[in-house]
Image (tube, rainbow, N blue to C red; front, top):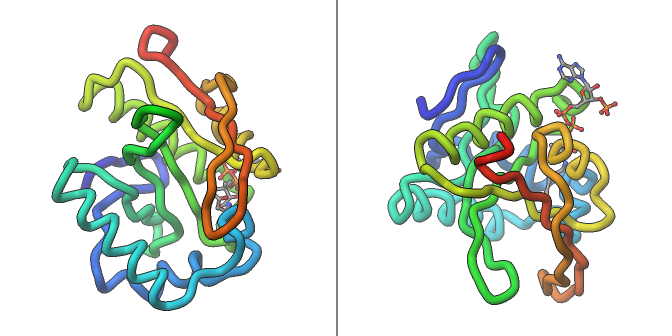
Length: 172
Ligand SMILES: CC(C)(COP(=O)(O)OP(=O)(O)OC[C@H]1O[C@@H](n2cnc3c(N)ncnc32)[C@H](O)[C@@H]1OP(=O)(O)O)[C@@H](O)C(=O)NCCC(=O)NCCS
């Protein structure tokens, strides 16, 4: 286990999680900010990328597990992401749609913020969010972040304006 909150724990993803992960990555509505649902091969690529991140950085997007039934209900964690000329430490989150509107994303994101400051000793951490993704921006705001700047990313053949929400360790 990497992190524990009141209702959740976070652990590394593993290959056995593929089916639970596909409930998230292959759901059109969940994946609208990523230009639609992933194919099986895109989902495997995503899972393999997290496992490589654990090896390289010791962190990545982790599995979010509901304590009451041990179900994998989402992903939340820390990754290094390109931003303009540099790379930044980001908190990312995606939940199974059946578990939206219950505060789980904010609960997991707050724990990742604490991990970034207390364990990684980061000076700042951010969430990079598509301009159209209001629920995700609300999680960043609830996590104490404020909008810092804007950049257009090119992903899956589409130009996507993104906002970067930031909190610095001095503000936590
Ligand atoms: C982004 C995402 C995780 C946000 O999920 P969410 O359910 O809106 O956010 P939370 O889990 O923090 O839940 C907050 C909601 O739960 C409510 N809530 C209910 N019980 C709660 C509790 N015990 N504690 C806190 N909030 C609670 C809040 O009032 C809030 O309500 P609202 O949705 O009506 O505003 C979800 O929309 C998602 O997975 N989207 C697809 C993937 C994605 O776009 N990821 C981000 C890429 S940048």
